[in-house]
Length: 355
Image (cartoon, rainbow, N blue to C red; front, side, top):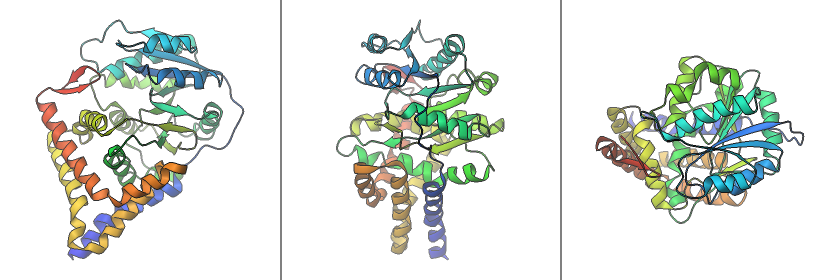
């Protein structure tokens, strides 16, 4: 009985991650682009914002950047590279910085470049030279059924142990959420958006005003996904690794700090976070009771890696899949540390405290 339970416990994530690898839709090749607008919230991103804006403007894309009280030259560099820059007048009470920035960007886009779609991008994404045309092609394919389109960018690893530690993030998403099945069948809802890249039909955005409705939420993209499911708004989650990359963190320290900001919000409550931490420990160690089930855990790691890594980064992803038990233990530790920081009001990111 125990062996059967463990095969289900590990086999189900392996099956879901396999379906996502096979079924998540990908944009088709295209070179024909139309006028488009990208909206980028940015705080202290001087080392990244110039290359991102330049890449988009070279593709005839209008770029609006919200400079969220940066202490560096983020706004200046964005403007020098062709972006329209909005500078913050201060963060209002009750708002999280990114939510306020995205809300203001949507209002600015409606005034400066009214169109059917609005695309929000994080400052750490790296678009391909044909990103705009191919993403527009994807919106034409998917937009008739899905008013919100998001997806997974190629995960570019940081230095050292960051690549091993961070592997739990795509694993938990792609092994527990049947994104590919929902996209293929049109049944059910994805309780998820990826704040790194998400396009909204303007009418749907202004009907829900999601960043305003969830103004105080730290993990805004997951909360928005739940809001959309509540309102029965369909979300398409695609595989965008061929046209977009992202390097979220440079090293282990910054990755742990960044995920500590988010981890206590994943499950929605303190009790939920403790349960999630317990599940991570169980996924990391339960296979020791039936060693053959490790191969099911390994399979889920390999399918996840194949989904989010490409080219020369894929062997790195495959290597980290073999170390998934250690990665999942570090995920449990992150959840517990994040819960402690939140209870103390000490969650901090880019100079702002939340809790």
